[in-house]
Length: 120
Image (tube, rainbow, N blue to C red; front, side):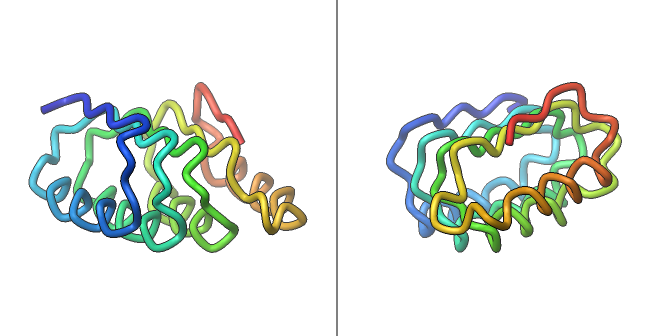
């Protein structure tokens, strides 16, 4: 399994937790799209933990997943220093605490300057 597209499948944080467990066994995954799933910060934490096992991951989409600053930071920490990551989409999140968005973006760019695409 190299590409996993689960856009708009109605995942909650519990679904993301279960997906995170499954992802740990699919280290060859290169693309993961969880766009438009309401995983929230708890789901982001579960996915972030699983990302460490996905050494081949090149593209990660968490667009419109109801992530706040805490969830965004979990993802940032998980992908930090991953030279193989080429694209990251975290857009349309952070609605309730947007004042934290600018510092997060700055930190993300500093840590992931090799990205070809960044949507925040």
